[in-house]
Amino acid sequence: MKNFTDSKITTKQMGDACEMLIAAELTLAGIPALKVPDNWPGYDIIAQKPDNATPLRISVKSRTYKSGAAYVSYYSSDVFDWLAIVILPSAQEEKRRFFLIPRNIADKCARQDSPTAKTASERYFSISEVPTVFAAFENNFNLKLDIATPELVRRKNKRQEK
Image 1: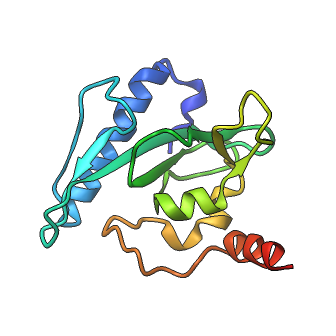
Image 2 (image 1 turned 135 degrees about the vertical axis):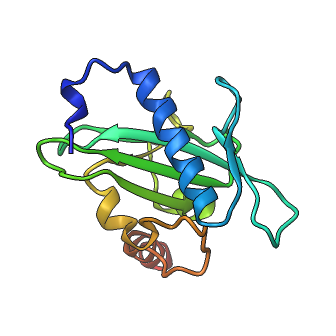
């Protein structure tokens, strides 16, 4: 698969393409979805399960895979129900990968800086840890909630119990 770091496609074009990919995959999985207008606050896609009257707001984040200091981030004030992470191919990752994670799980797994830091409201994940931490949510186009709790959440909960 093409390595997008060598591409002449802009980051805006790539972001739009990833949003459309997520909307298409959700629709093909039986959950009608569409991309909202650009710069919509908080989320990129609106979807609705056939058995649920409540629309679901999905924020899409895309990054080219690389180890080291590369992150997917959002703010605690962002309004969305699901986080979709699209990892694009690179020299270290051969294929495109999709992770659809409920907001509450993303919040529990996210790193965050100290409450006094300027970036205190930012929540983030290293792109290299996403495939491991959220393995159970890969290709979760049915938006299943009843997936095993990621290992990172279990470790954080154990630390809080001590």
